[in-house]
Amino acid sequence: MPKKTPAELKKSKPFYIFDLIVYAGVAAVVAVIFLAVFYFNGNTATAGFNFYVNNQLAAEYFFESDAFAVKSGFEENFSLSEEGVIYYANGNVTQYNIIIIDKASKTARVREANCVGHDCLSHTVSEKGGFIYCAPHNLKITPMVLTDPVTGQTVKERL
Amino acid sequence: MNGVKKILLTGLYSAFALISFMLENLFPPLFITGGRIGIANIFVLFAGITLGFRYGLYALTVKSVLGSIFCGNISAVLYSLPAGVIAYAAQTAIIFCFRRVSVIAASVTGGALNAVIQNAAFCVITATPEYFVYSPYLALIGALGGLIVGTAVYLSLKFLPAAYFDGSKPKKEQSD
Image (cartoon, rainbow over the protein chains, first blue to last red):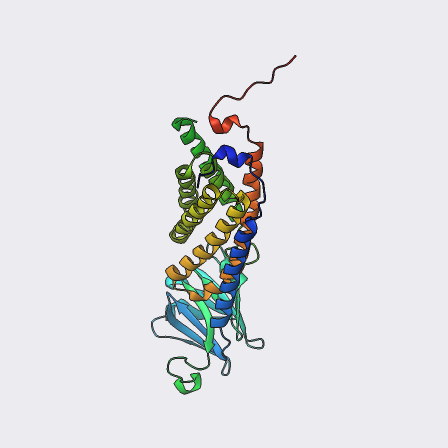
């Protein structure tokens, strides 16, 4: 098939009938991704929130007891105050995220952070789902599933 | 068009792409995190169409690498550059190999492809599979961005004088 030249492109039309095939293909791919995401992202009951630092579980918050538990080795990364939970990246007080946990609505959000981009400020995590990810500070907050999908053990049994 | 002129124009388009990228980065994302129109891709695609595949690739590389460095997020190169290269290759392949497909349709494909691949690469590199939930929305925003970019490139090609493509000097209008 002879290739199109730039000079021919100048004379080309903004729309051809075969464009519909291209648009239909793009729409089909988007639809497949939608279905895949919602099929694999099933709703599970949650017991609180997990806080990950560098993809390691660093702290947990439990709805029932309103308790915030920091794992061993991450004590320098978290501090509780009246403002909320303050996370310090790499234990450095100059790199922080202030996380507000609302017990009534069972949600958590980052109220303030001095990271580059501030993407974490626009997300909220709740018992229904969602997540917060701060890439510059290596912080991730996700819902804590009630039942471990691997062991079948509930959060209450683990405590 | 000789090689020297192509190199000069590539530098010019690269600069425009870089400036557009940095300006767009000053604004908040569109609807969701990572949602961008991709105005810089106008210059990348335009360079690829008018100068040649590899010149557009040069402009894309400059935009991705230097843009990430200047915006303070060097690690973004890891997922933005591969996604950009694959999307750009797909776009130019559609434009030059299929005579009955428009530049705009090719750009829409490239935009959606870039968004999905970039998000997938981000999920793998940062080990955050949760972010894949945004893929379909980012694909739609990418397709919308591709529509805008493709329309801008198409209109630019239309208004460009024909002498630009064959390398000859434009004829001066003769006054009576």
